[in-house]
Image (tube, rainbow, N blue to C red; front, side, top):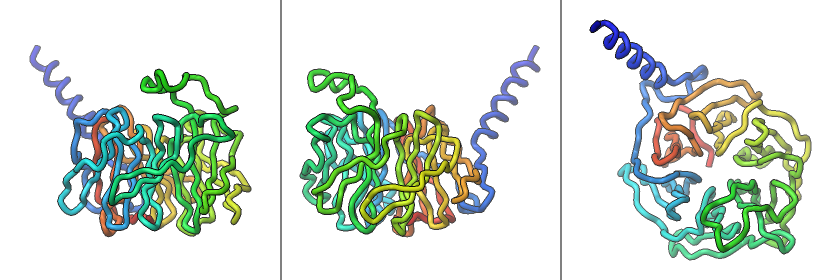
Amino acid sequence: MQKYPLLFLFLFVSWTFSFAQIEDKRGLVAKGAELVKVQDGFSFTEGPAINRQGDVYFTDQPNDKIYIWNPNSNQISLFREGAGRSNGLYFQLDGTLIAAADLNNELWAIDPKTGKETVLVPSFKSKKLNGPNDIWVRPSGGLYFTDPLYPRPYWEGIRGKEMEQDGQHVYFLSADRTELFRVAEDLKQPNGIVGTPDGKILYVADIGDKKTWRYDINEDGYLTNKTLFCEMGSDGMTIDDRGNLYLTGKGVTVFDKKGEQIAHIPVPENWTANVCFGATDRRTLFITAMGSVYTLKMKARGVW
C-alpha cells in the first residue's frame, strides 16, 4: 500500500518541477536565472513603473498604498498611503508619476518628492470615467490610458456600479493637458497598454475579447491602421529592447514583434497582473501577482 502515496508524491513533485520551468526560445532570460519572490503579504499588487534611477513603484490597490522596490537593497518601502486606490502607474520623463486613481475614477500626477497629487483628468464630458486602469506616456509628450469598467466595493457611497460613459474606451491626453479625446471606441474591455520607444506604435490589450491590437500613432495622438497582434488579452504589458511584448494573466507570455509566442514565464499565483523592467541596467523583470511581487534576471533589456 505504500507505493501509492509514493507515486502521488512523485507525480506532485514532477508537476511542481514542470510548472516552474521557463520556456524561452530566444534567450531572453539570463542564464541560470530563477523567479524570485521579493515579498508577499499584500492584498493585490499592480501597476509597476520604473523611475530613472531604476526603482520600481507599484500599488496595492485594495489597501490603497503605493510602494517602492529598491533594486540595490532588494527592499520594499512605503511611498504613499491614501493613493486614490491607484491601479496603473507610469513615469513621465520629468520624473512625475502618473497614476490611474480609481477611487474617484481620475487620472493623477504625483510629485515623487512630496507625494502631493494633482488631478489631471476628473471626468470626460462631465461624466465619470469607468476607472482609468493602465497608462503609457508617449516620449514626445502626451499620454494614453485605458478605461475599462470593474465595479469596486469601495465605490459605495461615491458612485453606482453602472458606467456613465457609453462604453469602455482608450483615451489620449495631450502634453499641454488641454485636449482629452478618445482614440479607440470599438474595444470590449481595454486594459494593458504600451508603446514602442520611438513613439510610433501602440499596443492595446482587449482583455474582454482575448486579443491584443497594434496601432500606428499619429503626431496629433490619434491612432490608425488597427491590426491584430495576437489572440491573447492582457492585464498589464511591457516591451523590451528587441521589440518583444510581455503580456500577463497566467504568468508572463512573451511575443516577438511579429506576434509569435517566444517565451512563457510561469508564476506560482492564480493571476499575474502586471510587469515592467527594473534596476539601473533595466535587466530585471519585476512582476506583480496577487499578494506578491517577483523578480527575474533577464538578458533582454527594458527600454524605459
